[in-house]
Structures are given as structure tokens and as C-alpha cells.
Image (tube, rainbow, N blue to C red; front, side):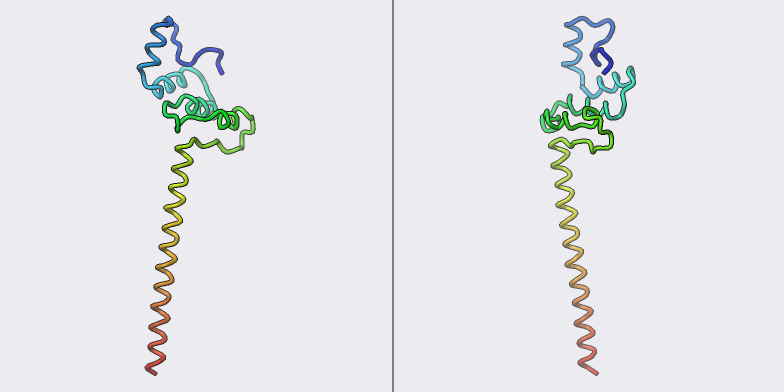
Length: 124
């Protein structure tokens, strides 16, 4: 993106470079690189997901190739990693459960109202 490796510093040699990127947290190095170079938000998104340490936090080849920065279809949604997809599914399941609970409560409340009304009519 810049023609230079994002983590390479001017005074680096091969040994110091490998040592630094092996020991340091990749997030810190990324943020330092993003401060040094001007990257678009889409480019930052792609780089972060390509360099994530956890395999389920990292893009697959297909996800990377579908990223809007690569496809240049800038309005397309940014692909989710496996962890992001799992979390989204978890939230959808929780939301569905809450919706079902609300429905049961509404039906129960409505049933109580009908029963009260029926009992009142029965008394008159």
C-alpha cells in the first residue's frame, strides 16, 4: 500500500525487525504504522483482519478477496471473520429468544384479560 513494509523502521536490520514483530503485540505495531502512513479506513480494516493472530479472527483468502478495498466496490459490506460471524449469530439467537419471550408474555397477558372479561360477563 505504501511500497514499504508497515513495521519496518529506518534503523532496522533483519534480526531487530524479526525480533520486534515476534515479541510486540501486532495491534500496537499496526497503530504505530497507521500513524506513520495515511491509510484509508477500509485499508486499515483489511490489514487488521489479515494480520490477526487468532485463526478465527483472521480472514480466509476468500474473505480477503471479497473485501471492498480489494474489489473496489466501496459500498459492499465488509466480510466478517469467523469469530464475528459466530458473535452475530449468538446475538441473533438471543434476540429471537427475547422476541419469543415477549410474545409468550403478551399472549399470557392477553389471555388473562380475556379470562377476566369472560368471568365478568358470566357474573352479569
